[in-house]
Length: 196
Image: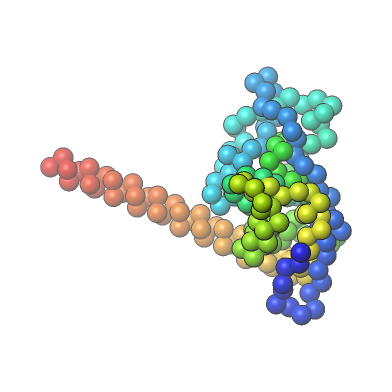
């Protein structure tokens, strides 16, 4: 499946030609573990990682190859939500659960933040949802993702697109903070009025 792009000369590439794709670690959290274990519930509705403090896993010969690297893109492989998020190096050593695909982009071809922005675009989500349909819960196979085509503009354009996506996300976060503060203010005012 290929995404349509408005730029006539934009190159399209198969996922398998621009990135290494593997599934997250299939293990379970362990109270004796010390490595943060990223799961879907640690992300907010906008696909932003809100905490690494939830659950951990032991680092051993099975889990060690699953340590995330700076610039890895996490894409939901199954569940009720679909989003992509870039893993940043300033996080502690971390492992993602099998609810995610861990995508390591070839940075000579594709910028990680651009890849996440494209994967989070509504038209991409719709196309991926169609691929992962067929059961009650979304589930995307690795082979389907590898055969998925995405538009690949020049790297400088990719960085511009990623910046626009980042600014958009920041604006949404600010708007959500304002809404939360307005709700709290409303509650405080109503509580004060009721007590009178």
